[in-house]
Length: 135
Image 1 (spheres, rainbow, N blue to C red):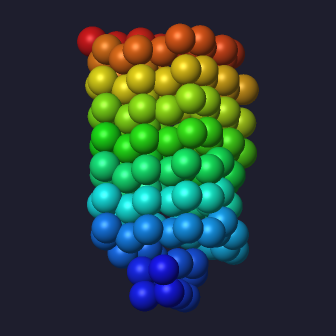
Image 2 (image 1 turned 120 degrees about the horizontal axis):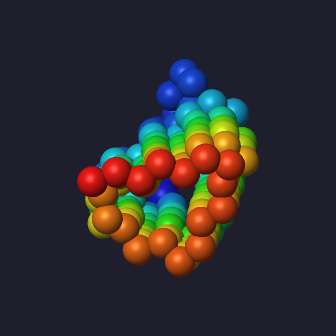
């Protein structure tokens, strides 16, 4: 794990194909490459997860962008969450907005503001102040 995590000026960078077996708590950003595996929680100001990754713990942040084909358990964001194509997860909570792109599967989405659904996705439960669906 030590070689897979690189300390940067404003957070950490996780290499592609990395396996992070501990919880991560960072002031700043967490940026991961493709095929990254997180076995614990990820806590940071901003979280950017690369394509085709797996996050088994909870993601807690202000802002999150989850890469294409990523599997996650739960995301809790103070502001915004963006899920790129074919993400699969159990629960998303956002204080301001959630954007979901084509082919995502999510059990529950709760937003205190806007939810944008761009393309067809499987969403079991949606709760938001304003919901916009396109395509």
